Each structure stands twice: as C-alpha cells, then as structure tokens.
Amino acid sequence: MGIRYLSAGESHGPELTAIIEGMPANFTVNLDEINFQLSRRQKGHGRGGRMKIEKDQALVTSGIRFNRTTGAPICLKVINRDWVNWEDKMAHFGEPLENIELVSRPRPGHADLSGGIKYQQRDLRNILERASARETTIRVAVGGLARQILEQFGIKIYSHVLQIGSVKEENPVRPFEAKDTAEWANKVEESPVRSYNSNTEKRMMDEIDKIKAEGDSVGGIIEIIITGAPVGLGSYVHWEHKLDSKLATAVMSVQAIKAVEFGLGFKVGERPGSQVHDAIYHSEEAGFYRNTNHAGGIEGGMTNGEPIIIRAAMKPIPTLYKPLESVDIETKQAFEASIERSDACAVPAAAVVVENAVAWELANCFLDKFSGDSVEEIKQQVAAYQDLIDNY
Image (cartoon, rainbow, N blue to C red; front, side, top):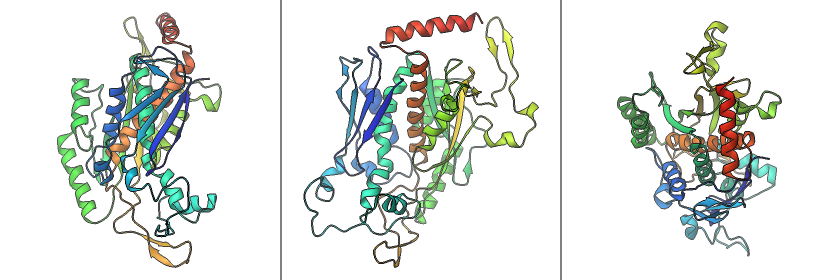
C-alpha cells in the first residue's frame, strides 16, 4: 500500500496539519531535523514580511513515542503565529463582521478567478487561503520525516539554484563532483540564494534587488540531486509506477513550478542518440556502472544506480507591488489587482520545498519495494536485495 498523507489548513488559519498513514514501526525520528527543514524553507534573499512573523516548528501529536514510529498514523502540525491577526476575519463559525472587506479582485497568475468560478465563491479569500504557498509548510514537515527514512539507508537529497532571472550559473558543480560533498552542502546552505559559486551568488542577489526595487518579481531554475538510491526503484510495467512520472508529479505540484526535466532534459531533442544514451560498463570492484548520466539516474521509469538529477523552473511570484490589471468579479470593472504580502523572489525557498516533496515520493517508492510493518523487516529486505545486485 505504501505511505500516504492528507493535509489541511489555510494560509492565515490557526494551523497546518498532516496525517500520515502507513509509516512502518521503529523508525527513529529526529524532530529537530524536521524543524531544520522548516527553517530552511523560510530563508533566502528576496523573502517577504511573512517570514518575519512565522517561526515554523512542527508538533507531533500521534504515531511517535520516545523518538520512534509506532506503526500508528502520525499527526504533524505547524501553528500559524499570524492567526492572532486574522482570527476575526477567518472565523470558522458565526456571522462575518460588517467591516470585513470581501476579496473580489482576482490576481493574475493565481488560482483566484478559476477557483472562485469552480467553487462558486464570491469572496476570493476562500480560494487564495488554501491555494497559497503557505501550504508547502506542512509538506516540508512531511518531507522532513520522509527524508530521515531515506537517510537511514544512505539516500541523500541536495538542491542548488542554477538561475535567477537573467543570471545563470554557467558551470554548475554538483555535490558528488565536488572535492568534499559536506563542504559543498554547507556552502550552498549558507548562501542566501543557494549557490555554490560566490560570484554567481552576488550577481543573483543583485538581480533580485534590482527587480524588487522595480516593484516586480523574478523566478529561476533549481536542481535537485539524489544520491545513494538503489537500482530498481519504480517500475516499467505500468505508467503509474514509473518513478520519473511520480517525481515529476511531486515537483509540478509545488506552487509556481512550471516545468520539470531529468538529466539532459529538453536537450535530448537536439542531440543524436549516440550523445544521449549512457553506455554500460562493468568491473569487479564497481559492478555495472556508467561514465555519463544523461538519463539523470532513471531509465525505463526505474532508478539505474546513478544520481538522480531533476531540474525545475519556477515562475516569478504573481503577486506584484506594481500590480497587473484585473476585473472585479462583482462590478465587472477594470482595476489593478489586489496586493497580498509577498516575496520578490522565492526560488531558494522553492528548492527546499521541492527537495522535500521529492523526498516524500521517493520514500513512498522505497517503502513500496521494501515493504514491511517494521524497520527490522525493511532492513532484511534491503540487505537481501543488495546481495542480489552484487551477484547479478
């Protein structure tokens, strides 16, 4: 069955909640690591005022006892500190206050208008509250749990920013290409734009500042790198079991992500097959291996033992301080779109969100292949499968 979760909560509601089902027993969980992921999501040059209000921390209310999963459903919560400023406006019951202003001006680039029509809402706040990227907070918390499972089996997930606006990293270095992977990860983590290159970092920050001064916003491109995944996660036997399909869905589910590619990505349409496919080699020490990774670690919907390389393009945040034109849904008159507090650039934060969205999906595939009710069963299956790989 794998694992699954359901989340609930609004941007300015009291809390964001997730209930996770199917988590095997006896996995060790570090709450500080989940909170570390939440803190990473709030960082980045160009973030808005909301990040000064919220100091996100996860609460666990079930399914974990003495740092270990019990096999029961896990409930995670993140409290919205801004709720105290919105309690009257977002009350769950009672009649609305007379002075509450309805949101009737849909913002271009948001879910406002389509959602209002779909759910027949005249106050578009009922749409924007759930559609908000604030929802990714609980997804990061869930991903923070999932990636701890993966790390116990040597699977690690990294991200960095390749481009912000017109500023592009021309010669990106990935963690497995660096002399010291830990040094690479620390340097990227300390960068306000998640760049390993100090010169590119400065140019990216200057680009954000310039765009922000103009009342505009800017997007970019991020790269996710996964190392240590064993051969054979995912499957070719049916479309819904293909790992790249699942990972693409996870990436594209993140607000403002508009494109995703693996390995060479769109460049496969420009090159002959001899420059696209990865030749296979074998040695007694390494077993089967490749000298290139154009496939991005996935062939036929399955991991092939190479690092998984995913890139995603994020559009500029659509809430602008020099708003675009829109039409009031009540009067049908043209207006400048209403402004909600927003970021000039959220690309570095989006990289962290995508990391954790991918972590959940990868953990799901991992536990689907190595299923069991406890971590002890899973470890036995992983060890047996490794023996099969070594002797293939």
